[in-house]
Length: 70
Image (cartoon, rainbow, N blue to C red):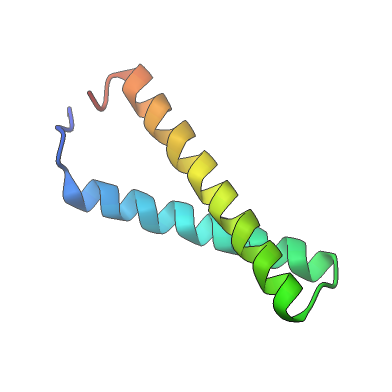
């Protein structure tokens, strides 16, 4: 099945999955490093956004390479 541009449901699902994984990675990192308060929140936000963005870019590139997306 070939997905077309503008598949809003697929994009929303991908955004939610990448955001959830990024948020979990950020929480895990800040907890492991025992950082609390405002510095912990800032570091968690940066890590979460980085991981979520990397997953989104990697996933969309992979799907384009496989021909699932155009």
